[in-house]
Structures are given as C-alpha cells and as structure tokens.
Length: 114
Image (cartoon, rainbow, N blue to C red):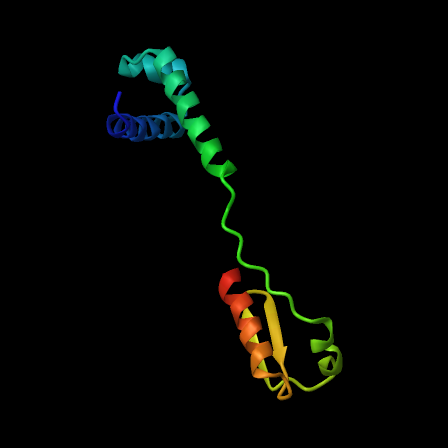
C-alpha cells in the first residue's frame, strides 16, 4: 500500500475511532452496528497508537541555551527597575544600568522560550 493511500486510510480510521469513543458504545456494539470487523478496528487502533508514540518520542526542538555571566546581576539585585518585561507568570526587571548586550541576551532567551 502506498504511503499516500495509507495516510488517507489512517486519517479515516482516526475519525472512525474518535467517533466510536465519543459514542459511548463498546467496540463490539459499534463495530456490529457498522458492519466492521473488530479485528480491523483493533488493527487500526494499534497502528494509530504506534504512530502517536513515535511522534511524541521525537525530540522537541530545544531553544539554544544562553549563559549569562554570574556577575551580571550581583550589583543590580536591589536597584530600582527602570522597566519590567512580563510574559505569563514571569517578570523580568531591568535597571537603567543594564547594558544593551545584557538586554539583548535576555530578549534572545525570551524569544526562544515562547
């Protein structure tokens, strides 16, 4: 079977399996009502589950790690923030004495994090 035909069939079976799950019927009842062999249903359920596992096992893209030197924040811990950057539950306070390079690195990390 060609991959294209197999993918189309897989999509069809994914919809059928979802329909069966949402119906509340047992596999036996659902298959009987639609004149589908249970063995065929379970075959495609196994195929689709394997495909789902393979897709989740692929390593997600990890944003590049940007190391910030430890001394960059030591003198700024108690300084008044000139700007606050917020994203979700994260807040980054930037003081007036923060260098452009430091802000650029923080922004790079933020860009890759979201």
